[in-house]
Image 1 (tube, one colour):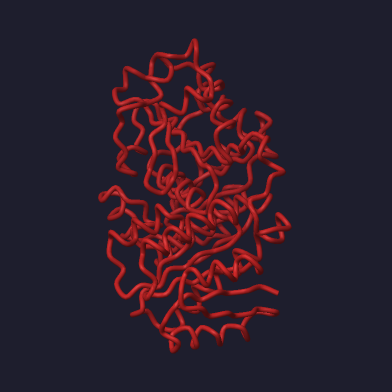
Image 2 (cartoon, rainbow, N blue to C red; image 1 turned 120 degrees about the horizontal axis):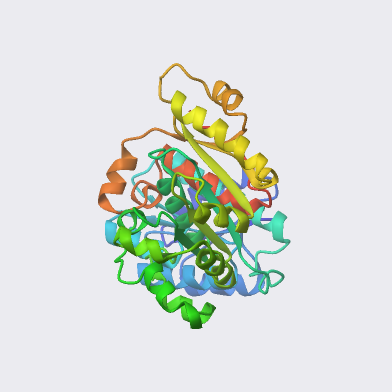
Length: 389
């Protein structure tokens, strides 16, 4: 029976949430006043969700969230705050809190957040058989997930960076690899200082091992690490496909997931990444040139022997009224749509701020669709429709 623990002094608020037990089979609800009491419950029972109310001091709540993320990655943590300031959101992000809701939100929105977190814990439990940190995969290399497309401007970097942030926030050790060696945008999109890049890693290549490679990664506040593209285009000339193959092999030793952002080409560098990939997702937008390029790309991937690794098509900027439907896109591109990301001006706004939209506007439709897609990657096959248009 799944347990929800609410930590809150205001019994009226926690009492309202207690009504959720009727909305999921076998759900149980316990309300406590202090974080110390929640830890006492944790010592004897394993919750699906821990809800931290506005009476919980943020520092205490963040400490508990970090502890849960390390020891019980299957447990979802939600923070309910009187005011959701940027500072609070950043602190929650760093602590691994799954969602932040405001007391000003409607009761329905708060309940929806709790139920979504509960369902995520249920999915984790079905996959791993436990909410604890599972040990079976500790010695196995991480999975390589490549975001691919041969047309520029379709949103590969946006999807890759947001996916990587979601995975990192969910407790997975995640590394984002920017393989657009000449004009990579990951550093800008995530406001990461390009003081250490792939160019520097290659300079030390003769003695490079996994431990040494850590020194060339740049950490994002979400917990994500990134191996950034060179700053100057000419620095890319010294990076070969052999370098990339070895770098990906080493990165797999350091992470649960290596998310690869690729340029719009079938270059030797990109083919090397595809060779190393466990899962490949193609990206397209709702326009004929993009769909045509996707069809050609999918056919080429099949010819090159990557067909079984192609998990489907991510339709970006979906919902735009341009005379095309998702079913028509699937038919024309000859590839199943596994995620539809709606068009939203919040995305360019977030990019200009250097903040992933899943952080900048977490309750928006576009952020939820990106988060759902990212989490689907961990469900064993990475195939789940996230249509919102």
